[in-house]
Length: 349
Ligand code: SF4
Image (cartoon, rainbow, N blue to C red; front, side, top):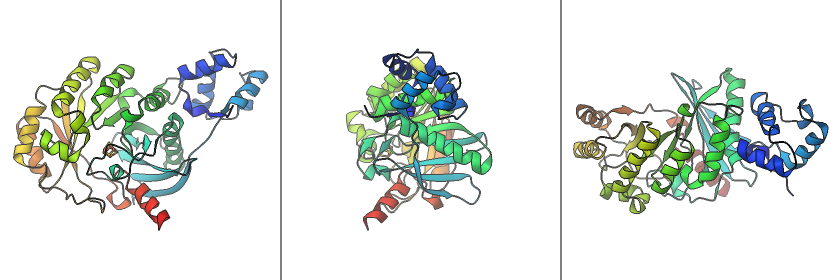
């Protein structure tokens, strides 16, 4: 049997795997402790694991890594963008961002994306495959190692908002987040993690049941079905009425405040009428709206709205809580998927 990446196993899966190898389940916690706390990836160096068990483990698991192809940083090292090469020669992107509260990493969950959102660089390239659990966990580990080496700091937050729709790779994303939040694993607090979805209603509730403390951000980007249908094909499967109903169910389970992401596009979704419609749509929900100035790319014709502040003011006046997202990394192609696409295009030419 081919060896498997150790990073593919959350604690429960690891315990099951160890049982199959006739090892005691408690060894799983010891292994997590060595790998994720002490950063030891040589079974022979794990002193509380017996010799025979060490031998068995080294026949079952490998410790792989992601190959860093490119690292781009802005002048202040406040945004760092990685292009990683996977073992099948596909590429993914990961971004570190510095905030007042610390460093956050934005991880990808798929190679490409099938959701086809019209404003998104990743949506222009179909999904090739889901990332494995290990490939999600390793983005965190590699980014954290780079940060430690270059700034002597640690990652404190994660946003699952890179390339791909996380809930379309449900099992691997949930496993990766279990490793990341596990007290024996990477031990990042669930409340420091946000996962973003374009609105896969059938999976949002499952996710809330699996990991209720993790924050969810819904990519909304429109105040009515007519606009959302044009921007996000997923709206034809799960229209706004169903999405809002799902959000209500989600809130009953998690009681965590929801975030709605709203990219402002010139002349498309940025009028005062749209803002008022949004107020009406989200009335009564425990939520806030994150307004995002659009990063113009050569991949689409959308223009950045000049009405960001005005839109914000209308929401504010009508008591819908909103923030305007800080802009980062525009000079280093930080919009989701741009670096990978530029690299792929270059390889083709
Ligand atoms: S915005 Fe997210 S879900 Fe939509 S195409 Fe881009 S990566 Fe996929």
